[in-house]
Length: 125
Figure 1 (cartoon, one colour):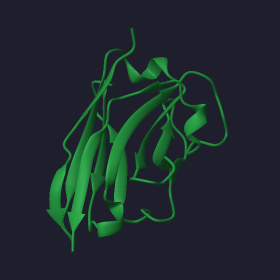
Figure 2 (cartoon, helix red, strand yellow):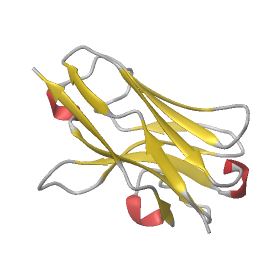
Figure 3 (cartoon, helix red, strand yellow):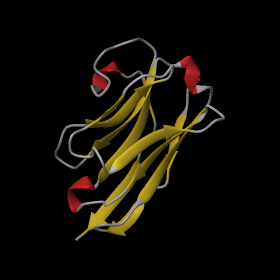
């Protein structure tokens, strides 16, 4: 059974930083692509950052480009999201996700097969 477990969320002031972690139950190389998503109350889930596990271009949402960085650990079972210069509008539940099949749209939530339970990020002004 595939499991993805997020951690690292919390409350910070605007301008602060957080690093989210996503621990997978098996090698991330067994997926085609992985990513981070977020969902604020009353809003649709949106893609934040994603990559193909075999390498290649990384995709970021325009709203986070230059502030957030997605990465993986050398153990190939942990994925991270470094979030810098956080803004109140970044407040949301953050999810990591994995997809089995190739798709060119890395930030589309419906492409993903497996989801973690989420970790809350709250940014105060």
